[in-house]
Image 1 (cartoon, rainbow, N blue to C red):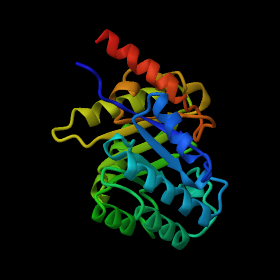
Image 2: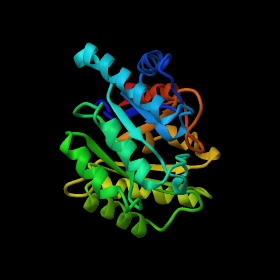
Image 3: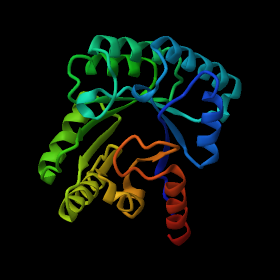
Length: 246
């Protein structure tokens, strides 16, 4: 049976002039989804809104040929580069949501308690899917604690639960692998994304079970957005290889 794991090509910067070419490039590299890492964009807030309006108009023109978007405005506390306060971030999320289509996704952190619930509520009103995420750039926690974090994400309203942890040794990688297995074997599994972070784990993210059991695998188009992130092209080649064997 063909594996249905999705690949998200990550755009870390965009302008009104190049955004449409960026989207085409992502699709040509074999990605299923585009993650727009808005917090990494060098554009001003006004320019970012115009980028999404232009994208909205082009996607309406293309109709069913469009590639879905994930919108992420990551705060500094979890590895992002958003410079404003939480009220600014909420406003930007809400404004960008007016340019999205049903089936697009919003990523919001579990610990962003000031704005999380409102972002989730507004996203679901728009027919968007919600990724609730948690990141730890220092260490990997024991598997039961990771399961509890995923449970909290689901309770918060996640359609997709995401955790990314710094893997300091091979045991940490095994813990994250076990977490994927446990999540997959639940009676009513919610799609999950479990990612080991760190440059030495780039190859691990291209292997089973991470490449196959993650609902979405994130790949760089140009610059990486997280330590150890493979390219979208590497992910597509790895997944094609898996599908040619099974």
